[in-house]
Image 1 (cartoon, one colour):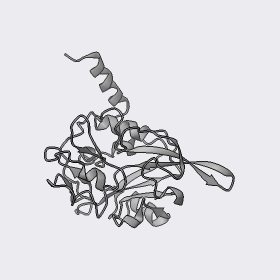
Image 2 (cartoon, one colour):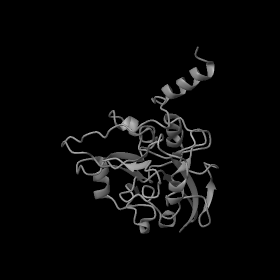
Image 3 (cartoon, helix red, strand yellow):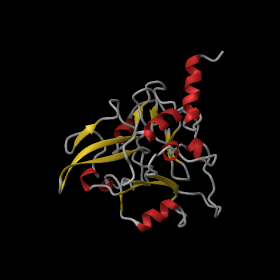
Image 4 (cartoon, one colour):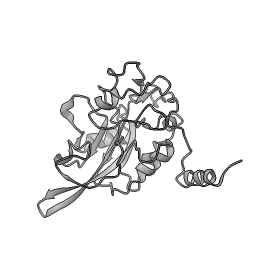
Length: 243
């Protein structure tokens, strides 16, 4: 028998156009690009369009059935100095699905791996929850899921992408700030944005080659991967370890 709480939960998913999906789901196989080759998925986030509404955070949490207080993506708000005095800046963060992901070699059971399409994913059945990958990630994008006891992070919503849908955060972005697609396809929107705009990544000096690119990223925020000293954070969306 379906409880009232379950019905309300299903109604919330339907309102966002999402389907419930367990956070430990097995990754879907990569799609093939129109050219027949395996795509290299990536994301461009246009900070000029982000309004910090947290729709991406909520939709991601619902799509991936995350515990309360745990997030795979989050939008932090900072106060930064400008020519006209203090200003406000937002910084959406998620796993960067790096070309050289430092989380993979530290896993003692090879539970973290990279798909051919570039998505870095976790085999929840293999993971022992040691937390080595959490410590190795220079972007504070991983956490130990308190419900499953294993490592958790953004997967670019492989369960959705594998059936031709966009990641939940992209589909629900109010301002259209998040753009997802094949970085190898020159005609794709993500490739075009990278070609036509100055883009930056977080912590480029780490040598991880992130595949999440930002348009309009203030230099003061390029090293902001968690709430810490430096620019004063106006709002902390996640009191748990941010993912």
